[in-house]
Image (cartoon, rainbow, N blue to C red; front, side, top):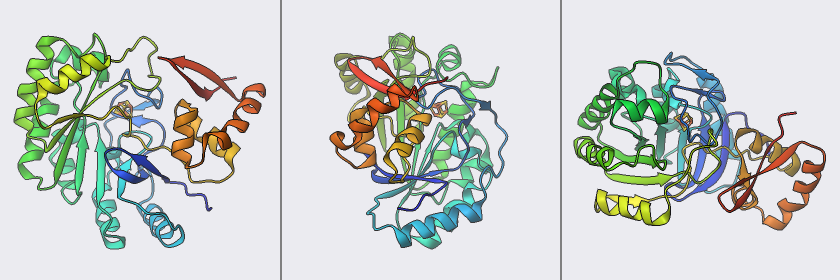
Amino acid sequence: MKSFKYLYGPVPSRRLGRSLGIDLVPHKVCTYDCIYCQIGKTTEKTIIRKEYVPVKDLLEEVENFLKEENASIDHLSLAGSGEPTLHSKIRSIIEGLKKITSIPIAVITNGFLLWDLEVREDLLQADIVLPSLDAVSQEVFVKINRPRSGFPIEKVIEGLVAFREIYKGQIWLEILFCKGVNDSKEELMRMKETVNRIRPDFIHLNTVIRPPSEGWVNPLDQKEIDHVRVFFGEKASIISEFDRHPLLAPERDIREEILKILKRRPLSLYDLSRGMGIPQNEVNPYIEPLIREGKIKTRIFGELIYYEISEN
Ligand code: SF4
């Protein structure tokens, strides 16, 4: 199988079926540095939009992939190794993809830049926009998402509300809960009021299910997240899956593929096997040698063993 520079997967996602990830920014360029981020700490925190990857090359890759790979794909997901709306030509990318294929396009975004009218208009042709909103009070926003200093959460919320006014597609709003950070009764009450203003088609509730950027971050337990789901009502469902950043490469050099994937985030054997589309017993023989060579190491989170790249 050919290697692609900007494409990942297709990866199975509960929300998007088989999703072909399209990486619009290099790792890890983002407007936030979320404490729960599974792809590591933000190395370039910015609000500057630019053509991080060349539109022409990216569209050519997608076209070649669809011609050459016999893979069934339910969605093209603009996401990847950071925040996709930072790409200044995301509108041209969406328009270009629409010319190539009728596969629905999903944009997985942290929603921050939606305060900017140009960004809101850039996303109008997408079929689904999946923004996240983890906080509604300034204190919690700063703690969980760690945006640029002094940026008001109210402006982010107003952006989401304004986007709903002009966008005709589906909005699936994701809220990720970290225990003791954004799950207080007061924050939940205010969150519900805010969600009612944003009017998403669905509310996806999530918690920390893979090793987070900060080791002190903890998930809600099942009872707690069930309680939150009931609180948000019938539009809400629990997704328990971190699919904002599909990060799997379609190479068939298993050893290199494992290293490449783990460079982006720690994963369990189950995750590796599921994402690579090969059984665990075929992935497993590569794991021990990589640990012995010091290329990867184990990390325990919850009750699972994850593998991650060794820093030495
Ligand atoms: S979770 Fe997404 S929005 Fe948050 S820091 Fe990671 S890449 Fe950025």
